[in-house]
Picture 1 (cartoon, rainbow, N blue to C red):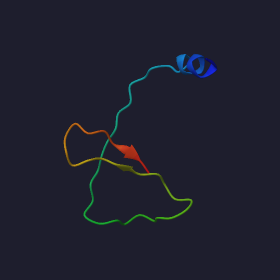
Picture 2: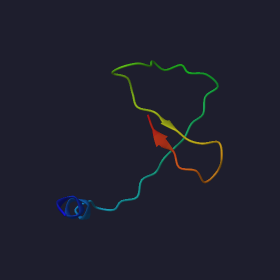
Picture 3: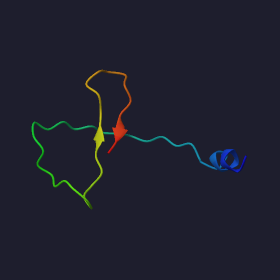
Picture 4: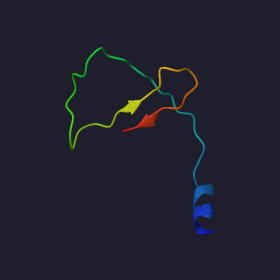
Length: 50
């Protein structure tokens, strides 16, 4: 019950997402680096965060 009540406290908002595709990885990877998202090539599929 407390989990459901906690979810009701979240405010709804509009977020803008911008997806950029690069031919190769030029950013650092590994522990302590930025978080990136993967978006499917197929339109309409949801993205997920890595």
